[in-house]
Length: 111
Image (cartoon, rainbow, N blue to C red; front, side):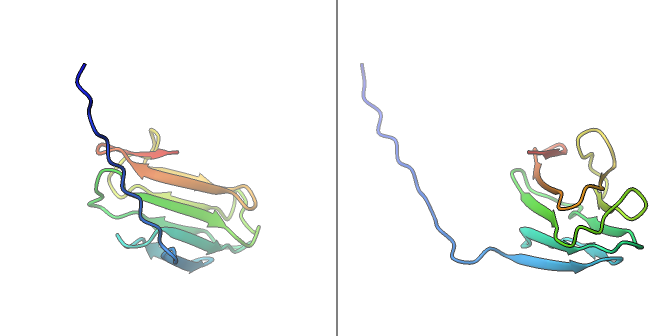
């Protein structure tokens, strides 16, 4: 048998790109964003639009920080032309809910 060497590279980042989004706003997620913290509103819908040209493996973490979401004032994640687990959008309606989106090369999946 032939031995094959395997090398693994690990990079540690001291700061995670974090964006705070105000409740009721529409925010176009930037390619360099990673963690999106939403200060949800009890009376307004907040919309997050993922990039229209994502790269395979691109990932975003989205978190409701104010516990003010509900079915009538959700955080709406818009796939911007790409499916999110079978739909065009994903509504976050549970207080303190968090999701991670990963682009598979074809669609966004919740991981």
